[in-house]
Image (cartoon, rainbow, N blue to C red; front, side, top):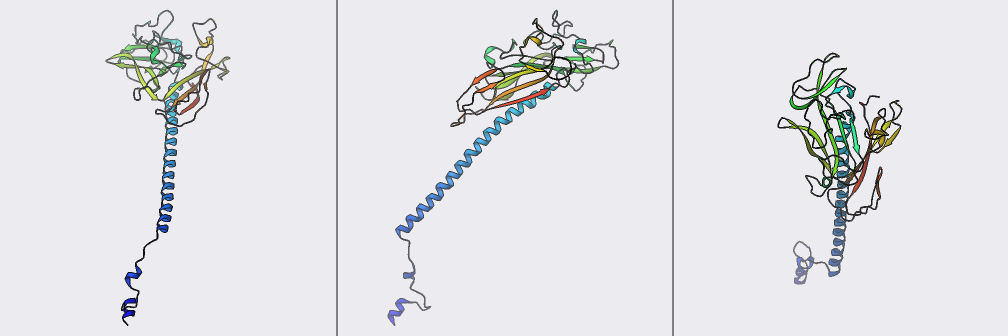
Length: 334
């Protein structure tokens, strides 16, 4: 009877001392191995997901910078050769001429050249793999990159304002002025006042936000302290090279017949081959956009060639992407 009591308690269940059993060493080792594999797998999945996220983020950032650059440049180019009510810049008094870059004493800022602002006969002009603006020194310009200038009137009319270079137009004539006193005696009906817009785009080796990172910049006509000035401003960091070609209408049928580099003699008034009947109808742009930060381990052996320049392969742990676009100049009159 005593032996049975030592085997079972009063409820008939086994002795608690005999029910408490642990795991063997082999079972513990198997559990540890399985748990380790699960943890390693989870860490690997996390690291792969994180790497994929970083890669996708870098690609998206480069694409975003390229698209933003086009979003700034495209509306500006489309407005080239818009002069308010007037469609012919040769009828605008006060524009730069060969004999006198400032015939009406408008006093435009001359840091980028005497006719940088008021050469309305050239609503768009460029330089091939360089810039000829004195306001951009060699150390501030990315070698082998193009530059171009866009000129037009602001689409929204403005009130005459002293210190702002403005364009007064009718359907038959126009005049530039900057003293805030709208010129009178115009023929051709009512007049309209528009501010003059001038933007020169180029690539710089350094950014204001990220030192030693190239950036797309522009020199813009502005007013500071009641006087016209040329202001330098950054458009977007990460643009490493820009190439430009102009689409020309050679026969006056309002279609592009050929594309040329900005230094083509046929569109250079200083060249003997200049043809004043040729119209720039479109602009083709290439942008080489680079990531702001290095991406170790990236393999990029691409030989980058944009328009007429061969930049070769970089192999420097930066992600790059080429963005290109052709933009029609909708205000050009044949």
